[in-house]
Image (tube, rainbow over all chains, first blue to last red; front, side):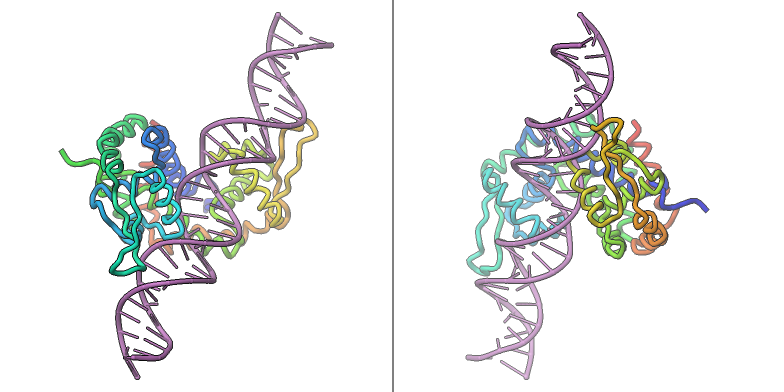
Length: 139
Length: 139
DNA sequence: TACAATTAAATTGCACACAATCTAATTGTA
DNA sequence: TACAATTAGATTGTGTGCAATTTAATTGTA
């Protein structure tokens, strides 16, 4: 039996490396928009629905308040979002897109295509990969 | 044409989520060994070859000195590795396993199996995933 | 042999990521 | 209605991850 504690035998290591590679390919593209990758994910969630609570964003992106609170404050400082505590339930903080945040969507439109080109990926490759991960994750 | 800036259309997001999921499944298993996932990767590299430079470890794991230097210091503090500056070339720091570090391999032997069980993954699933990522990454 | 270029780590600074805890507000229920 | 339980965010602390810079050592070359 092969030694499973061998880096070349690891299956999770390539996933870990690939995820880092993706983010590093996004970095220069997103830098032009003053966004990091997690911030870009938040923007995508907000472009779909312009007002959401911290919790709703966190559920969609699988991030907790310990990550999101400071991240959203940085995005507020860059004037992409507003943070307002709900008057109906004061525990809740509503995140809304600013005009600047909405406008950023146009600039971001070319990012998905640019990324695929940068990584030299085909639509087919990505679909196969995505479907396998979704299939595995769903178990 | 579909809106590519839609979280559900993203291919990279599932990879990012899956990588985080893997690490979170490793966490409780590795905690018993007092290791984090990146530290576990370093240990695997060292179990293969008990003396390596910071650079060699960094190349294998795709991590730079900004990440590795403090990480290795934490591992030194836990007495899993020794850090010794080379006498031949004083720019180089050699990392070696301590006896405690070598012994940890026995305890770690069950981790790969436990992880697959925890994530409910089959060998087939993982091989397919690994091969696709390697194929895509190699382009 | 001087000395510029290169190399290996370390350092600094910023931004996640997450566990654990805390605070304040709301809800459920006796 | 009191009041315990729950909920939403914020905070604290630790550990990556990486860009940029720094320091010290070594190498290449005029």
